[in-house]
Image (tube, rainbow, N blue to C red):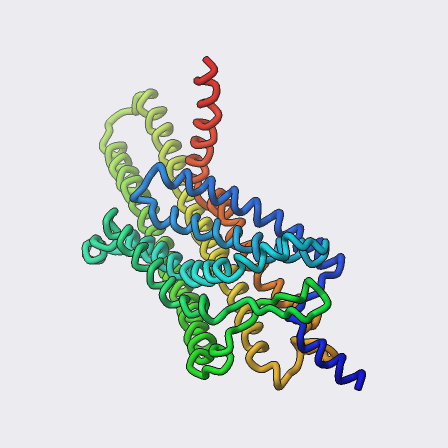
Amino acid sequence: MDAMNISVEVEECGFFEGYTLQRFVIITAFSVISLFGVLANMLLMAVFWRTLPSSVYLACLASMDMLICLTYLLLFGVDAGFVYLRDKTLFFLYHRYIVPIFFIAKTVQFAIPFLLILITLERYVWTSGEKTRQIFAPVFNDKGRCITVSILVNLSAMIRLPVLFATEVKQYPNCHDYFRSESVSPAEWASESHAYYVFDFHVITAVQTCFPFFVLLILNMIIIQRLIAQKREHTYAMVKPRLSGVALNKAFVENQSGPLPENFVLLEVASEVMRETLIKRSTRGKRSQLRNAIYTMLAIVMSYLVCNGVHIFLTFLERTDDVFSLLYDSDDPNQSSNFYIALSDTVSICYMVSSAIRILIYAKCNTKLRNEISDYLRDRKSVPTENDS
């Protein structure tokens, strides 16, 4: 009889993820990183705002990265706070806003890879021939960029809209533990609908994860291949006139009946040295440009692969838990296992970190943007000085 009462009481309590000191410290540390990501991406938004509408893609990406970092802070940082610190106010506020914030996170998470495709496709067009640039001109002019971004954001919100209705906060008034008296759970219709299962797992996984990754990989490989070809053509174009000039000078020397003037010889030697220096600088600059393009591709594609690869693995385990039984405690089916907690934390951290460090990737791989950020910060510092004077 006592066992039955315990069973009933457990069933009346909501879903729960415990926090050890180690997990609390880890989530708190990454919450600080997410706060840095919010501020860093707000800085990028301000920098890109100055060059709108030509920079609308990058401004939109910075906005989405900022939202990813902000939603991480609200969903996981606050969760760690009220569970480990036993803060009832945070617990109450968390369950008031979690559903719309979760929807925003899912929408932005869906839109980011397609925005990266648009940005990469524009780079692809820049390296293409005149005919290709003319075909894509209506898409990648100022008006076209604004239209494509608007379509992308609206479509992403529409496709992920079911999440808003498939997630709900359930209340358990008979639970003795206040911090399990409310819990976020799938709505009843979502749990019972096979169509929603197919849409949420198979369709979203294919559209959000597999398709963008292969498109990004292929486009970036083509861009790098074209950069290599352009580097070779540019080097040959500079060397060819030099070789022709040497041949002409040789013929000129052979036709001379007497010794060449000393000034002419010095001028010729200086000219050759300058040409050598220019070729080396050009080659070094092209090599640096190519290396930066490779680093950018690796940073974008690999971070995307890691985030979505771990996410697919987690989703697969969630859908097949009745087979593997790895995600929930064997004694309490409403309590997550340590493995499930660690894996879900890893997925969230991967997405957040990839968005938070975007400014570092830009600063490392894009000299022009690095200078724009420095100019913006310098201008902001000079404003108070001008006001004081």
